[in-house]
Length: 138
Image 1 (cartoon, rainbow, N blue to C red):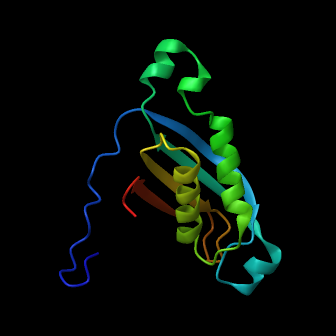
Image 2: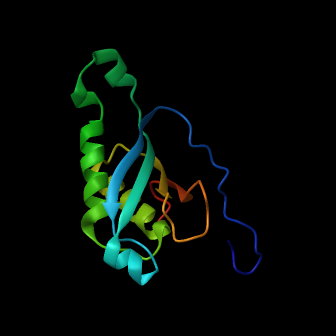
């Protein structure tokens, strides 16, 4: 939000076009504000959509014209495990930063970090954040 006007920045820009999608990537981590989260750890799940032009890959049927989802997974896993964060917002941003650094053809990323065992009194469900970032928004 703009601090002076309290108007949110433009989050309505489209995240359209081609995309590579990975859902429910499971990781075990020690992210969280509470001391027991740092000591015991817990499961997290990550959903990703990475925007890139996939036209040439669709026409050629050659991986060299696309981005390997296996490589996207490996970069995401490394980013998730690289260091401990207190906030899942920071985990998500770190994943976005690593994906942009590793894959120059990715133009935007949507990442959702889900924490199904968040230390809150819920019978079912999950706590989650979702970030939408365009390359160059930094």
